[in-house]
Length: 239
Image (cartoon, rainbow, N blue to C red; front, side, top):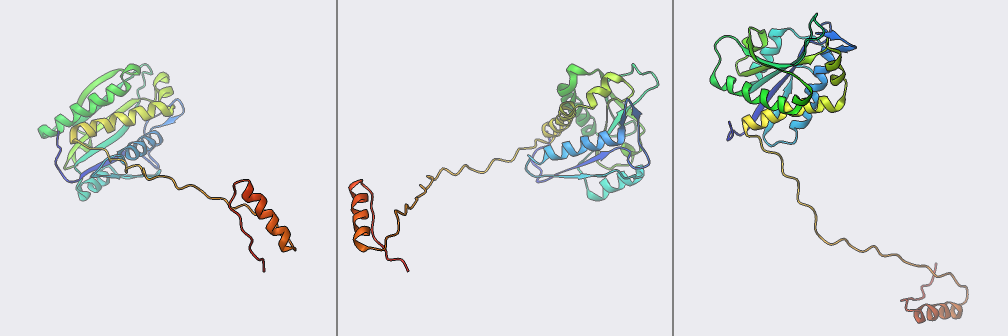
């Protein structure tokens, strides 16, 4: 959709961290799950050419909301994705949703939300409810200068969804959905594998030592026996 640029700079914001645990429920801490999700997304993006990825945090540290936006702005990111989990006092609340800023945003931001949301739902849809594409006055969406979307990746307060978030396979599908959205919107191209070496494999040669003799005649007789059996043999004096 936006192919042709030489380098796509993607900024991943794992929400919360450090003293701010985020949503907590069913044995899960939002800050930990979204950090793992961000790392998986970044790892998958290594498959693509001309892509650079930066993360707000790669460990359990706290950053202010304005600091997150400032880092992305200073870096000159093309897109900002803030990763979160949801929670609700009603433990039957469930599903996936995305947000963009509820103020003035460009058509490209709306388009990016549409593509990203759709691709994530394609990956996790069979297991989850689509709560829709929404808008809100979140600081990280308001204060960033580039296209910015915040994804709310299920409810830790819902036992069924928490169980999904505890599985590596589901987290991987969630990460893949984010990557697929980025690939489709920016026209990302995967790296081509280096050509396979088709040159013939050299045969390994092995030398057979038939023995050591104190008498030259016995050594010569051994060579004759080997030659009679079809082997190339010779006598070499040993120091």
